[in-house]
Length: 395
Image (cartoon, rainbow, N blue to C red; front, side, top):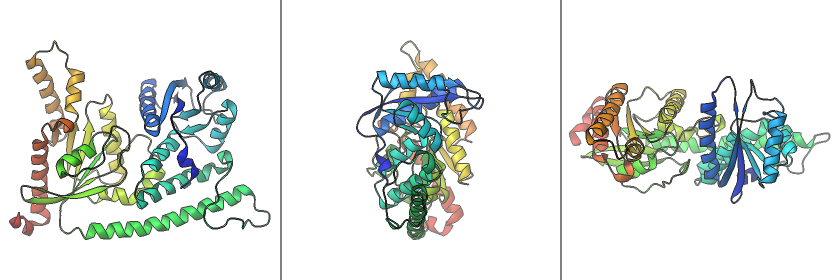
């Protein structure tokens, strides 16, 4: 994999930068920067300060204005900051110009997410998917930002007459992209064969924003230990388990979490992983209801499902972390009747909006897990009656 996977080494100190334009409000930018700070923490960087500038449109050379760039430079020198992270995607020329102006390593949100994915990738498939996305990210930025590309694979020392270093680098990257695409096609064929060999089982897939508790719910439902922690993209590899509720078997898959501004190269690269979503019979959309912007996160997931042409599938909406929601919503002076009324309003609203397919749980406390199991079982049984009616007599 590229040396760029080690963008953030050890505990680096960083500042994060966002721009308020006509397309997004200051409140939205603040929310995006909150998430960017969490991404930086996940990658191992400590965020010291955030900079926000209001512009009609980003500067074509340095994204932010000269004054703001100088402010960032002075702060970086005074506070020994060694990394600047922009929330929006930068061109190679912008990265080069900003780095030259402030003398500090500069990356953007896409680069940061790719770095996290590179660290989290464990299987050969995930590593190849991330590496492909990295190369696709780098290719259009070579002229502006690439000072040296480690020579990988064939073509080393075979530069033709008159061929410049940048052209050689481009050729190496294109060859690597082609090799990785071919490798992933083979993996995709194997994955497709594995999915076909699973037999006539109803398939259920957990989907949701990153860090909403999908893996914890997967562990509760499947009684299998899937890695789960309070960090973004804790797991990249799809895990599929055979689960049996009340003598009714089905396949349950945990999938990679979605996020705002997810680099499109990653969506393209993770095709075989996302096929678990496309080919699922039922989706379980897990939501962290304690998050201040949980409705925005729901919208991001729904938009991604629409892009994957998977939004019209039967869906169970699971509102997780109800324990944290209650801690944030209720104070010690609220009476029990008032608390019940607030919760009932919440239940009524989302049951209405989901057509009665909302379930409220606290996975870490195992609260209402039986209610979730019952809801899933009913959906699975309904689909067996439609898809494989002859099998239901055996359950």
